[in-house]
Structure formats: structure tokens, C-alpha cells
Image (cartoon, rainbow, N blue to C red):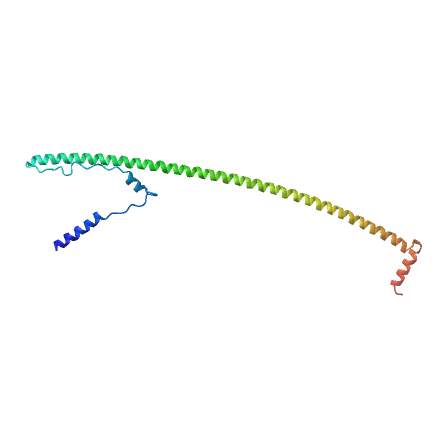
Length: 193
């Protein structure tokens, strides 16, 4: 039973270590891939494989304590370097973000300026069109008023001519001598006796 567990564990470990992944094509490397490609790894550690078994336990303990101190010091330096690198990356990202925000702000300002200029041009065009429309209306009103005055004058003249014609015709129809006679006839005809 223990041998089957050991074999299956060995197989899974072998698979995990032996499986290789094909890296994506280098057309557009992501930030992580770029970081992995530019990362400089430390060389082989001198501590690995350097331990030799000592016969004196106190000497072994002292050497082990020294190795632990040196290892702790290296870990501290590595962490410090990592923190500095992360801070540099953060500052670089912050600088890029600020540059991007500034570019977006400038583009927005430029777009707003162009929009305002376009609005001014449209307002000027509307004002010119309105002024032209107003001039056309005034011209049409003046023409209509002049036409109305001419028609009114013609109507008044026609009315005067008609009245003059009626006056002339009425004087032709009834003479003043016969006016009294005609009036008496008209009154007697309408009145029954």
C-alpha cells in the first residue's frame, strides 16, 4: 500500500517538474512576461551543498548558527532589493498613469475647445441666417404694404369714379324740372286712396 502511494506521488511530482509550457509568441508581451524576461536571477547559492557533517556538536551548532545568520542577512538584503524594485515599479506605473491622465485631460480640453468653437460657428451661422430671414421679412412686408396702398388707392379711385358716374347718370335720368313731378307720382302710387 505504501509503495503504491509512493509511486503515485513520485509520478505526480515527475509530471509537475517535467511538464514544460510553451511561452506565448513575443508579439505583445504582457507586463508580467516582460518582467520575467528582464528579471536577473541570482547565481547559485554557495550554502547549498556546502554543509559537511562535523564530529563536534558544538562546532556544528556554531557553524549552523553562522550559516543561519548569513542566510538571514542575505534574505533581508534580497527582500530590501525586492521592495526597492517594487517601489520603483510602482513609481514608474504611477508616472505612466499620471502621464496618461494628463494626456486624456489635454485631449478632453482640446475636444471641448473644438466643440466650443464649432458651437460659436453654428451660433454665428444661425445669427446670420436669422438676420437674412429678418431682412427678407421686412422686404416682403414693405412690398405687401406698398401693394396694399396701391390697391387701396385704386379702390378709392374706382369708388370715386363710380360715385362720379352715378352722379352723372342720376343727373341724366331725372331733370330737376321733373324731379318734383316724379316725387309726387312716386308718393301717390305707393299710397292707396
